[in-house]
Amino acid sequence: MTHASRRRFLVQTAPQAAVLAAASVAGWRWSWASEKPLRILVGFPPGGGTDVIARLLQEPLGRRLGRTVIIENKPGAGGQIAAQQLKTSVPDGSTLFLTHDHSISILPQVVRHAGFDPAVDFEPVGGFASFVNTFAVSGLHPARSFEEYLKWVRKSSHGRSAIGIPAPASTPEFLVKQLAQRYDLDLQSVPYKGSAPMIGDMLGRQIEAGIGSVQDFVHYHKEGKLRVLAVLGGRRQPLLPEVPTFSELGLKGLEDMPYYGIYAPKGVPAAFIQQFAKALADSVQEPAIRQQLEAIGLVVDAMGPEQLAQREKAYTAVWKRIIQDSGFQPQ
Image (cartoon, rainbow, N blue to C red; front, side, top):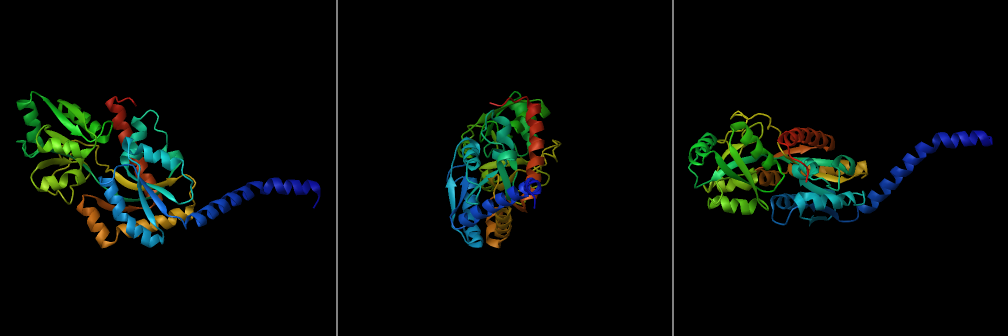
């Protein structure tokens, strides 16, 4: 081979060599990391709904992967702190982020400097459940249906009412704005630091109504301490079959359900994603695990990486339109 032909050969094969080298490094990283404990970041405090879900999955995931799984809470800013940590984690299959729609689809749209971009910084690994938000009143409130609540606001509250929400700049806040516009009422969001203090005020009727997830309200509803009057989503919920959807009540466009998913930092080896996605799908189908997830109001819905990416994209688009139409400006 002449010097010139050798140069042509090196130039032509350099890109392929670079790809092979990168794949080799990624594979080596994963091979080494597979001996390490697997950290699953949770962006909410211990004992909260997302933390409970993560700990339900901890044992079956560890058993199926043959690794120690550690749940690491990084609470704050609606999952923003945990998301930022995932972004800076080494993409070797040793760190993941378990979260729901707020951190992935909503937060980057309502915070001016989120510090991460899910489309650029994260790899969807797998989804495992859907859930819906609900509208409820205090059990001490006279309304027995959403229509009766609207009549009460108009006649007994002079067209005004405060509605509790678990956090500012969240889907419940934008739902309040939609309800106010749709029914021509003065409805004001009252943000709380989580669902627990909001529910406390609802129980004592310090606030008349609130918006929260099925898992937040269902047990209080069953006990008669709160009364769920409507749910989002395209169908009635198995735990609340008597409660109509907002779509049934004439408020369209809220059929997409929030989701729970697990994400990895960009660049994690594809082999790891495939292995973990299978372990996750198999874990949530275990009868005991599925039963516990359904008991807290989740709809078990195993999604592979591509399905989760599509779900995230569609849900984000719906709420991007709603947020823009509300006139909200990122803070």
